[in-house]
Image (tube, rainbow, N blue to C red; front, side, top):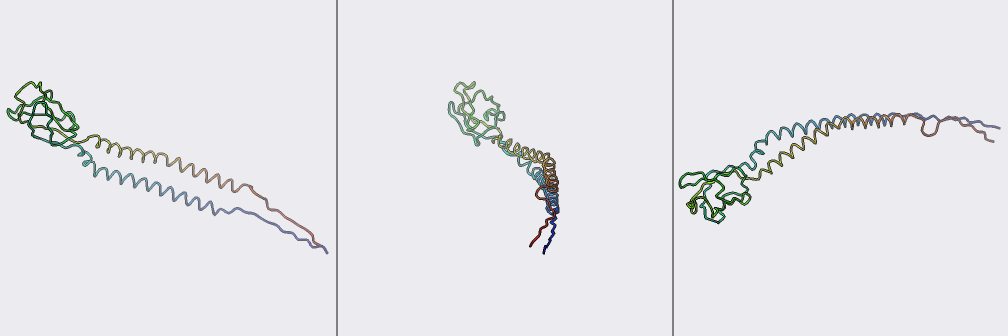
Length: 195
């Protein structure tokens, strides 16, 4: 007796993985855009709130910091890191503004030294008032440059976001197309006999 058995195997494509990938892509793009918008707006708001505080860094004005000038001796002012171009000296005895050419100034240390060859010998032992701005202005400049750099990086990331999305979409489409093609075994009919 001959028994004939015929069986067929069919293989089909399931799109479940593709649907999940598309949902993940959509949610990911939405979250990325929201994060960038929130970071940009919150950072901008924070910068507006602290901008005046940043401008006050190393912007400390001092008036009438008095000292007694002594020939060849460095006299310490109340503050160091005096900003160049802001120091003026006034002789309190006769209310005369004195040029800095009569002094050697160490701006970082905050000291003034009356030169032994000063124009007026009467400066030795005289009381002077110093007016200046002190503080390291590079800190203010560096802090602002760092903030601007952060905004530039955020803007650049936003500029590249469409390219990243396009790359992910292309790879997803390629995966779907290649998944639908005939990679792997084909289904068919098999038969056999048994005795």
